[in-house]
Picture 1 (cartoon, one colour):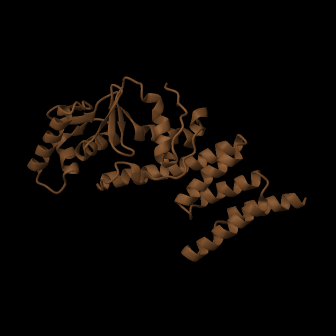
Picture 2 (tube, helix red, strand yellow; picture 1 turned 120 degrees about the horizontal axis):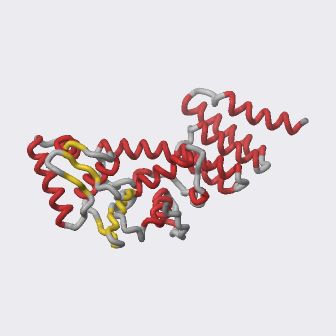
Picture 3 (spheres, rainbow, N blue to C red; picture 1 turned 180 degrees about the vertical axis):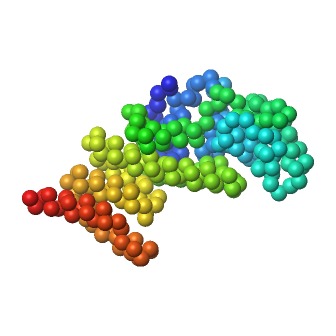
Length: 266
């Protein structure tokens, strides 16, 4: 298992892309190919990073998001839904030829099936695996080393608007928000309260009405001994929910604060 290398990034990388680059840094010297779908699409082959065209990116992205063998006709109709089946099949053959021409040998194919070649590491999968470990409550020490400044899955295959790409962005966005809430909890339990606040604030920024994120943030304020800040945060959230949705937050959130203040009076 390859350990995560902790590296420094510029402020511009302090987003989801920065976390991805940190996760993949341990694989850059690996002999296995590395497919980059976050940020400008590329493939690292034999230690050399090679730019991917939009055509390369769409085909490799689809096979990366849907591992295993797929019927060629189905893949062609998914990638080129607005043309006749024969034209779509021709487009697929042409794209496979262009990949081979450019030395990007990442696809296994025969006359019936297509798949991403075994052994290809994909940056989106590394990020998904990171989220899975946090959600399962089994993070590595290195998983807690980098708190992204924001969550933006629009960085996946930027500029491409296919429905299946948008669905993957939405799926991963929700997993990352959940993972960051779990990360905040793990950091809080480890006494790393400043970082726990950072992780919770990222989720609150990405989804201001997400109550579980507000709960994580309020809990961290309480743990660091700032109950009045926690109360102010709750009131701000309550007014926002009332203004936008016309409902109150769940009673459990108010009860948590009330329990804290009652305990302090005793």
